[in-house]
Picture 1: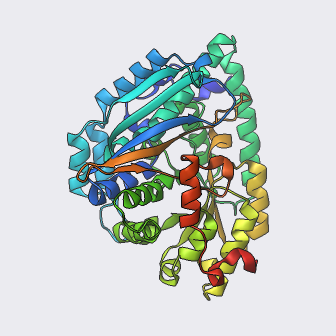
Picture 2: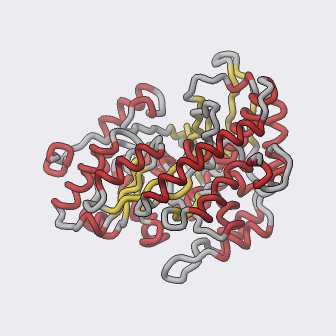
Picture 3: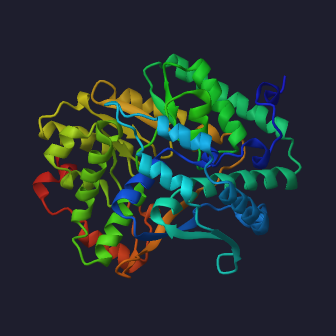
Length: 432
């Protein structure tokens, strides 16, 4: 039996799969959007698409067709069922996750226009969108998921590949993962696969299998529509863009750029409490994060997320960090989310279980492992504008991996100086 016979009975291709825009939105988009709506309503931000891989996307994706698809998504926007889903989500203390004012805002405003073109300088597609931060942020995961689906549809068509054979190879690989997970019920993970999935159809199939066969392992999905359809927990907090944009806007206004980091953490905790208190650590380097994370913050925040650099070094730093503050690491959690495969997940779990709680955010090799090389694409905020003051802002990401740095070279150097570790007594890397 072909795998497709057990999958949803829809035609292959993104247009036929779902009309809901949340099919391409990760849960960390509305959580970030609400903070932007409340804290920076006058910020205008530009998101720019980057292809970090070797594949030429224009070989298989037509710019005009992709433009039409994104225009179609923009025209439909959020429908009432999606807004009702947001309105029904609650925090542990009973508060609504999203305020009535924010949901009204989503219902009354259209997403900004996305511009897709061929850029001869890079000999590939260029994609960019500008608008109010609280609305433009949603395009990141939508654009990435749409590019993936269009790319693989074109790849299959142009190379005369039998899609049934691809799905059967994906099924074989998925079954091998499920078999390993069943042998390790202590491994806990969430699906983070929206941005680089093979297709929404395959993504849904993978998630359905995990819900049915790995209930001890599977914690939830970042994909909002799949979470809603399968009645599983939506997973997500915030991405690099929060630190990047807060820092860039502070810089443009002549404020303390370095202090923007801790300010964002305090605002986030005040907004969502312990439920979403999972901090991404590497926007300006994890060494800086640990040196800047106050004892009060370390006590309140329940988890730290690793997204670049050596995961073993990171975990040792974090365990040492909590130990130096007399905080039991077993009351805290590390979320590993950088380029994971099943072998890395098993190895990290074996290394650190019993020392600190471990959770995995599993993306590309979970939802795009069918024997065709996946894309390595991102879409990040690159610059912005304070529409009240007229001040222009540029955004920088440093990362624990130089290959993931974003920004002009001179700005990267400047931000490395701004976010250097000042207090060597709190530079935990030296204590490992």
